[in-house]
Length: 209
Image 1 (tube, rainbow, N blue to C red):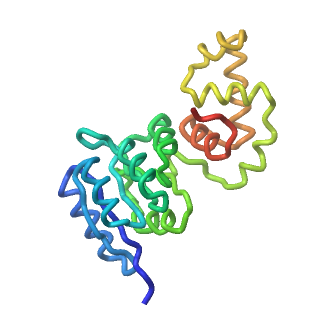
Image 2: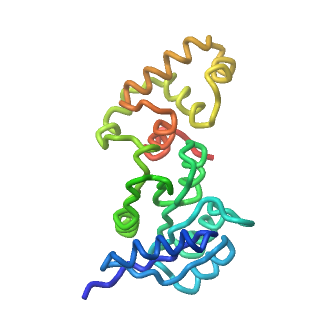
Image 3: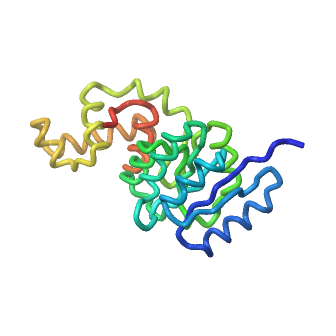
């Protein structure tokens, strides 16, 4: 028999954890080895149980999921963390990537494929919710099409600056920045800022502090 993927569930709502546990009990290749209700407990359990995958809620009381993720990955670099969140904003996604999460999926997604996402991160792949992710794997080949100026603008978009702030920093008009932003999105085939930020970070087009 194949070895099961061991999973630690972290959520401050016991009902939510129970729901996820039920979902995963239907997956023959997975085993829930533990549950935690807060960040500190998740770190202790991850150290003790060495799960392959930690399903981590972003918003936890006390220490949040991002801080807990950082610590878990520092303690156990082989553990993959799959972040569950109510937030699709790019700043949350960026922070999750920076913390070392291998995946970021939205809790309220109607078609939440938790089992499939766990399998992917356990296999070393990254998985991001389609609402915050780029649609096509081919875009990496197109990123070379960006000019140096566009890469500068892209860096500032990832840093969360508005068109006006970017215009001031680069001594250009806001209209010119809007054109640059549109060109970047067209070049990469991306239509939302959140997707652009995730893609830029994952493709290594920008520096992440």
